[in-house]
Amino acid sequence: MRTMANQSNSSSDDDQRHPHNQAQSDKGDNPRQQDDNKQQDDEQPERKRPGKKPLIILAIVVIVMIVVGFYFWFTSRNIETTDDAFTEADAVTIAPKASGYVTQLLVKDNQLVKKGDLLVVIDPQDNQAQRDQAQAQLGLATAQLHQAQAQLALSRVQYPAQRDQALAQQAKAEANLLNAQEDYKRQRGVDPRATSQRNIDAASAQLRSAKAELESAKAQVEVASQIQLQIRQQETNVEARQQQVEQAKAQLNTANLNLSYTEVRAPYDGFVTKRNVQVGTLVQAGTSLFSLVSPDVWITANFKESQLERMKPGNKVEISVDAWPDMKLEGHVDSIQMGSGSRFSTFPSENATGNYVKIVQRVPVKIVIDKGLDPNRPLPIGLSVEPEVTVE
Image (cartoon, rainbow, N blue to C red):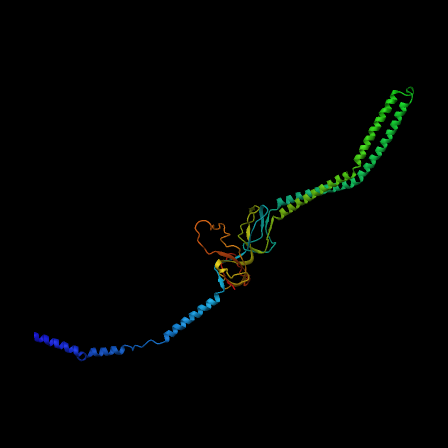
């Protein structure tokens, strides 16, 4: 046993000292394994050190990215844009100023009309009756004016004649008074036996009557002498009749105006939208019939307040329309609203109450379109657009 262990240990020591011999012994012992190892060594590619080509490609990519980034920064550093922008135009609600049934409807939905075109006709019979009544009142007032004018012309001749007649009556009364006084003196100066009491009383009565007639004649002369006042009275009557004529004319004009309100006409060129009236509809004054949208369109862009630093009226704008992607519009900044959108909202914020959180405000900017519009592709109001403003 001890001999075998010693042999084993010496064999191990020999193997450790001569590993090459052991490998050769193994190879000599297994030639197939030796062939397999040689084949695996031949199949393994020769490992090479990495070259400079990947580094050059990476450097080129980095340089291209830097150039592209610089190009976009350089081309967009003077561009301000927003997607909070919409088309706008003048839009008014068409409402009648007269009440009645609609007898004619001369427009259709989305129809283009011109300024002054007849759109709707309301039953005019009531207004025509008022117009005829006003015409009759005007005719009556005119006739009364002519009568007053004739009376004025007559008074300018009549009143001087009446004054002369009153003076003549006064002279006659004075003469009668002198006769009555003479008769009275004669009756008093004669012998009582040569006359009678009756004659004396008659002379006294005639004297008193002559005095009364003279006083009456003087009063008539005084009244008749007021010629200017009497003529002025007739002139005032003429003026009053003239005012009545003017009043009747005003009533006739009002009646004609009310009659014209039965015809609803277009205030300007535009498109008929939101029509809610039909023939036979009973409408009241002020009732909405439809809206009229002007074809003159502009852009309202709500820019952030931080984008307004260099923006000013006159800046050029390029506009793209979502509805027509191939349509490119050009315009310019017309004006900047003096107030943010929230300031003019129905319920403006009360920043002085409660906790305050700063929010970037948006300010409406009006952009006028200069060119690029296509009459075959109109722009309805409210379309989304994206303006690009070139600032300086």
